[in-house]
Length: 140
Image (cartoon, one colour):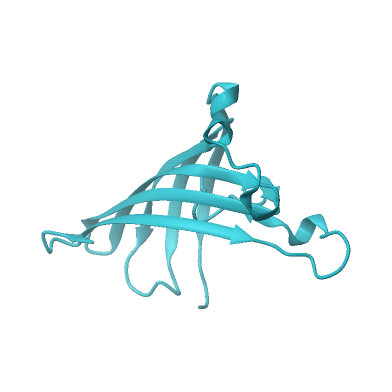
């Protein structure tokens, strides 16, 4: 949603992912992974893996300068067993962060992001993950 037509955007992203083995056990490299750029950017890529995942993230973006946008995100979710069968609120984790990125084509952006991730609610939501990402995208 563009807030008051000012190039400030507020978004809610709901995500669910599932893997289904065709035959035998699924190799760990093919599991649903959370972390890195995307819904759970407070965790390093591949930090959380399971047979299914559910996340909800709030994202706010705003212009900083003519070629620079800011972005902040706050998310809740986790990975679970097949078909979210062990989904419980006490097993959810938090992820949040802030960053800046170049404007223009989303295929060629430069960015800087700092993010944090926590343990589950049942384990006290202790911050156990810090992620600093600097880089760019190339392609589509």
